[in-house]
Length: 295
Image (tube, rainbow, N blue to C red; front, side, top):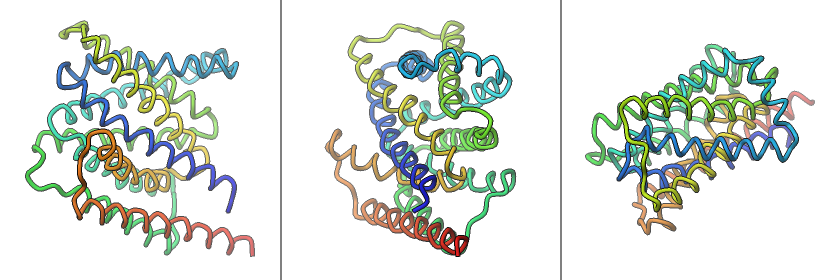
């Protein structure tokens, strides 16, 4: 298997795994605080994790230089991502986090469309079949009639569209800008905008018990999840990274069983199996394309 492709899918799968904890831990906290207050603490911890990460690698000076050099791009992503996460956590506050995670996977479709139009990304026939099967599994797991509100659905769709835009921008500049710098300044700017919003019209105080869940959520969500997601964009096309990350509802479901003691329905199990089959076909399709290019 092509080593760059292997790295890309590994990072994408890790992003899905760690991203699944975002929905579970955030729901535990959003019962008691507003989404913007949650984001202040959430991205404060995330920014601290990134700072420690860069200090440990001896790259903190380079990341700061990158921040000044690419300020306009980072600022654009920060604004879009701030609106995206506020919409997402508002939806989580309103309804079941597993349902939100399923609908949030519509970002896969938006990223594919943006990737094809703006990044000229292409799929071979086998990869198209794998992508269609994967997305069919996502739709099957996503359909929960009567379990979500119209407002929560619209907020999740808005979040997915905005995230797709930032994924496309990140991929476009991934050859010139270190993807981890995107993740770092994304976190810092979301923290800044959230703090401004809270100071204008919110309450910044939270219960001590909530700090534990926010700390765990920040480590798995905006730190590891986004770190590995942006790393995957270095090696994979944005559309294919997004399709692999469509496995996220599967991990949300598994974690819901383990942590929240939820029992999956037959439809959810079947949808999960379809996602796995689709992803396998996608990988096999890519392998066939690579071998044909070599020969």
